[in-house]
Image (cartoon, rainbow, N blue to C red; front, side):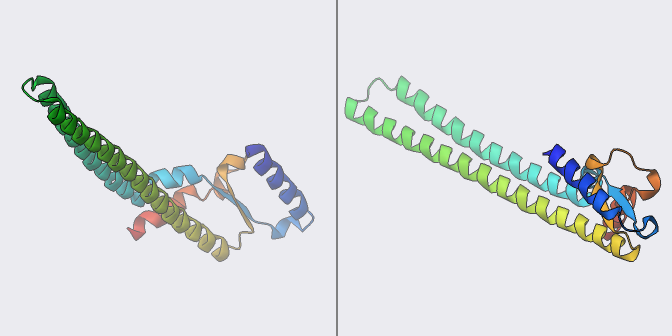
Length: 167
């Protein structure tokens, strides 16, 4: 994948190089660094971590209830076979409910993480676009596809500062 992106970037640069060198302005951004260092990411990460912990506690609580019920069933020697079967059915239902809850919690958390990530990336992209327009930058690349670039065309810290001031 990186090879394809790199090849496309090189091809694009070759095509653009036919224009006058004076009229082309290129910059790059370390998207990973921006994403990791802006306050919005930290806020979202903390909120998601709290929600994960809450779900884990709920799952643990339900698991302990099931284990307690199983232990009680094993210790109940006075129960007839019909009553034992009833309790086993209840235990199995609780296990199924726990599995369903865990699956729904995982899916919900993944969906929230994806939505928040998209929201953050969109905000980053908007800031990059605004800088590019204001400064007549023709092309902004992700640092991962840049083999060499001078610090003067690195927009990473500026984008981090702009996004953190918005918070």
